Amino acid sequence: MKAVVSVIGKDSIGIIAAVSGECADFGVNIIEITQSVLDEYFAMIMIVDISKINRPFSEFVDAMSELGKKSNLEIRAMHEDIFDAMHRI
Image (tube, rainbow, N blue to C red):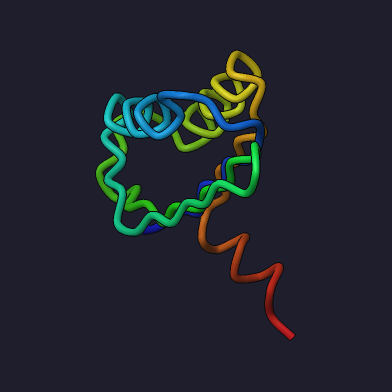
């Protein structure tokens, strides 16, 4: 099972470290990552493997959102099933 994690906000030191650390705490493996800094803005999308997650996925979603609030970022985690359903024609 996979999920999509997006991160958007003002660039600062340690964003990738904080997000990847939170993933590791939940047993979530980063499969693919792309990030870009446009002027002073940071944007990142990750595809993560949640097949070995050690807590409910809803807790991971909440933890990512809370990390975003603490870091002045918008962080969203979405299960691949929902992401796929949203983007079907």
